[in-house]
Image (cartoon, protein in one colour):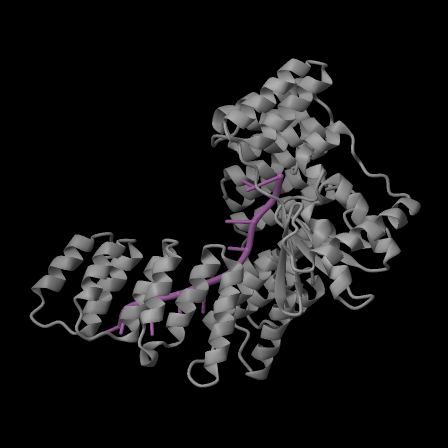
Length: 497
DNA sequence: ATAGGGTTAG
């Protein structure tokens, strides 16, 4: 109890004053220290134990994993006596990797667990929830489907946790119909279940469905939370429904008493900026009840780019660089603004400054799941074993794409403004590598599903549309914020994203 | 009695 009230010292005194101490008393102390992040103290108690139980081990593993120290977690895990290596120990590892965004390692641990489970442990609901979350993040649909089958085979109940995790996995893997089926099968639904469906609709550009989902939710007596409003605002942004978005933003505080967080302002500024209402967006930033961050200013900057409002853009860049001197996008944008005014010297200075400050951009990365394995590609990557085949597939597509009307978008501006900038254009963007690998390694006619860590650039978006047409394949590309379904030369986002 | 889990913009 004293741990829960933030008084580990009191808990420790009580422990020391106990006339007798058993394994459970030790475990309680370890768990307490672990939960408040004091792994040194937990380790000291753990090392002093003469007799340990599975609880002692899993508390220690989870404690290290929560702090992101997966190396120590792993070392401990490997030391657990076989008899004590129960399902909770495994779960601590799987969830540890998942919570630290090391999704493919989470999947690997799960697969190791399955190898072992034939004799000793079986995954339970907690394991599956963790792995499904990793699948959702990786876009690993095959494994996700396998887990769905496993749940059915073992006749496991679709409780709130498992149902939500399964539904979210389908949604994030691009199968919105399946996600809804799971939702419908669930006996009990909470605010998270509804939010998953609303945000799934938003991610797929189905704004009307998102809005009707929101109203259904209210009819069912479920109260939206701040995350639900994030989802509904994102739906309005993706659908260009500016007035609706502003109404929901109003409604959030007025009817539901939820104070907008910086994230909500980010959505609204994005909503207005994309629609070209730049001065309204800037007014909102200047009247915010919380200090604006880089994301909020960045959303306005995005609008300045689209609508070529260079004067405002330059102003916004200065604000961003005050907050984050390493913001790569701003340097790139600023140099473009200078270049467009013919101030080439200043443009060059800006690029130089970027190099001096060692501004690092997130490298573009895409991945695709083929035969239960996730294949990862970086910009210009040649490390894949089948790299030669991949590149020859890309070059063989080239002439066919040109014939079908594809014009590479190589203008200086487009190279500057995309997230992966100029020098990358000499290489191949990661999503093209992943799609090409999909083309050479899957059966004709199957849908190709690729996930990307950044947003897709205009040029690749055009290329994907053409490729879907000439190879007669559906390409589902999930980028950082939404899904693009390319089919017969068109994209589900209607080129608004 | 003490351990492990799901939703969030750009």
